[in-house]
Amino acid sequence: MTGPTELSDTRPVVTRFAPSPTGYLHIGGARTALFNWLFARGRGGKFLLRIEDTDRERSTPEATAAILQGLTWLGLDWDGEAISQFERAPRHAEVAHEMLARGRAYKCFSTAAEIEAFREAEKAAGRYPVFQSPWRDADPSTHPDAPYVIRMKAPREGETLIEDAVQGTVRVKNATLDDMIVLRSDGTPVYMLAVVVDDHDMGVTHVIRGDDHLNNAARQQMVYNAMDWEVPVWAHIPLIHGPDGKKLSKRHGAVGLHEYAALGYPAVAMRNYLSRLGWAHGDNEFFSDAQALEWFGLGGIGKAPARLDFKKLENLSGQHIAAMENETLLREIEAFLIAADRPALTAAQKPLLLAGMNSLKERAKTFPELLDKAAYILSDRPLSPEPKALASLDTVSRGILNQLTPLLEGVTWEREALEALVAETAAEHGLGMGKIAAPLRAALAGRSVTPSVFDMMLVLGRQETIARLTEAAGWPGEA
Image 1: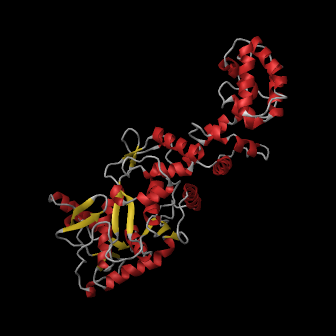
Image 2: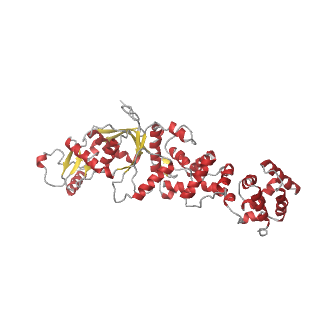
Image 3: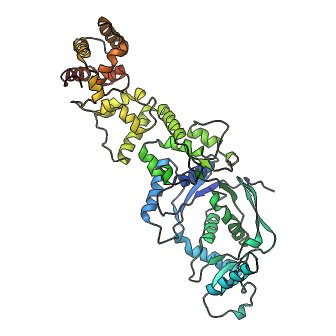
C-alpha cells in the first residue's frame, strides 16, 4: 500500500495551480503556486496552470492577466499553455454522462421545493438533513418528460478516508455526504466535477492546495472512484493568517502579490519568504532557489496556519539584496522603476549606480530604500539641501571645505589618499574625521544621512565632487 506522498507507479510528478480569475493574485494563492512549483520542479516534474473561469459573471480577462503577470514576476514558470476550465465544459458533461451509463450516477427530477421540504422534515425529525433523492434507484421507465440533474451515487454507509500528506488521515462519515449534482438541468457541469476531470486529464499526481478545500476532497474522491481513476496525492496546506492570528485581510496590510512587487521586495526574497510560510527545513531561514528546490517536501509542511511577519520579510529581503550580483540588482531595479511607474534611469546614472552598488545595497531592505540611499547619484546639480544638512554647514565647516576643495585637484583619486587628505585637513583645525563628515555629506548629497562620503566621492568622480563642494559654498547661510 502506498503512503500519502507516494504513487503506485513511476509516473513523473505533475502539480497544478488553479486560480479563479476574479481579482488580483492573493499572497495565499501565490504561496500555493510556489509550493506546487517547488515540489514539481525539485523532482524534475511538470507544473501546470489552469484558470478556473467557470464563474462567467466574476471572471475577467484583466484578472487572468493579473494572475499571469504575478506568477511571472514571482519567477514561477509553467509548462504549456494555461488551460481554461470553462472551455472544457463539453468534456466535463461527457464524463457526467459516462458516470450515468456506468450506473454510478442517476437522473434526478426532484424540484427545488421538494428538496427543501425533504430537508425540513429531516431537521424536524432530528436527523442530518442530507437529501436522499427518490430517483436514485427508480426504473428509467418511470422517468417523466421533465428537466433533470445528474447526481452521483454517494455511499450511504461507512466512511470515506482522505489520506492527506499534510493533514494525515481524515475521516468523513458518508451519512453526511449527499448525492452530489455533477450536471445541472441546463447541461452545465458543476465545479466539483470539473476540477476532478481536469486534474485527471492533465495527469495531476499531487493536488497541493489550501486546507479550505479539504471539505471538497471527500466528494471529489468519489468522482475518481466512480470513474475508476487513480486518486492523486492530497496535500491540504494551512492558510496564511495575519500577525494577530486572524484570517489575513487588508487590515493587516498588503494581501495582493502585486502590492509586494510595488513595495520593492525582490522576487527572490518573496520566494524565500513565502516558502517559509507553513514549511520548514530545520532552522534555515535564508536560502537560495537551488536550496529550496532541493529541500522542499510535503513532510516539512505544518498543520497550523502560518502567520505573516513583515519584519521577517524585510530582513530576508535585505539579505537577498545584499547577496545579489550588482548587475542583476541593477536589472531588477530598472524593472521595479517601470512597474512602479517611476522615472527610468538615464544612461549616465546606470554606470554610477553600478559603481556605487556595494555601499548602496548594504542594509537596504527594499528597492525604494536602496534608491533613497542613491539619491546623491540620481540628483542633478543644483542640489536642494535638506534643512538639517544645510545646518551642518556653519562658518567653520564652510572654511574647511573651501580649504579642501582645491586640494582635491591634485590628490590621487583612491580611497586611502582621499581619507588621508580629509583627515589631515580636519586635524589642522583640531577636528576629528566625524566633525567634517556632516558638511561633506551635505555638500555631496544635500542630505544628513548618506553612504560613506568616500564612497560618494569615488562614485561621483573628481570633477563632480569638486563641483558639488564649490556649489555648497554658495548655499544660503546657516539654517
